[in-house]
Image (cartoon, rainbow, N blue to C red; front, top):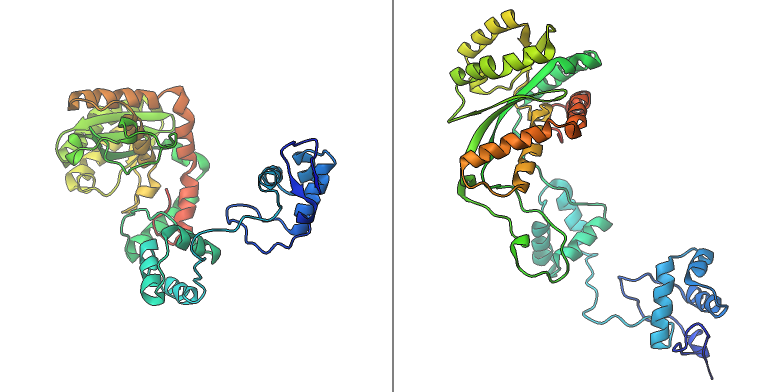
Length: 376
């Protein structure tokens, strides 16, 4: 005999379907309920209870209860539909050997592991399947980030300098002016990014990222930051030489620094670029430091992760890449100038404060990583 609950007129279910054994495998993308759970769901539904109340009483997902009731009404049985397609591939025999090679560092990428499984085990698996099996044994994928090559001597110098900086008071970094140089391309040459669009979205400009050979032209930019924003910046042509750098410090940095720090002493930071470490540069900066009230901050080589100016460059280039592509370098220079003004607005004041406040954490990470490059 058949019965029709009032809550669903098209729900047809035989009474003997409740007692049928669950001998069919459910789909892997759906939650598998036991026969007792399925029976209890139907019995509670007959009492005109909502899926939310059923889920709360049985301590299961409300969406799972609603989906189960819907599919049961369509099929007339509580049994799961038999999964079609090829049988599930078992990697149990090859996984121990694969795990040993991973521990030894013989392979790292997913493609290397897929070829290893194909050659050693004779099994052809998809990248998604292999990725799930890696997660099952506790391995996850990490993005490999390019970092400077640091030798043992440089690592020791980084740790030694970081330990010295940790002994300074918290306000020490507020008197430091960080500087660096970068190249801003007219056409962004960054890595491809993912964007969310409707399914089956047509191939239009929204799915494209323009690129150009050598960035379509570029500008060389020198930048100096303080705790409240970008203190000074200067465009320069060609490579940075000792004469150009000293001229930038004299004309662009020192007037702004004297205005910002007033009569207080301050520190100038720069990296180990040849233009910074040339004898003429060192002599000129020492003379200027005695008359202008600043000194040079000792800086370990190959340490861009300790320089917050790199984060400012990343933010600046991101703002430039989101704007329409400039037609020439003059428009690019105006665009960079406008975006620097945006970064100096009150909306980004907290950004620079966080960068200066992160110096203690950067030093601790250098020490904990034994001098290796950090995530910054």
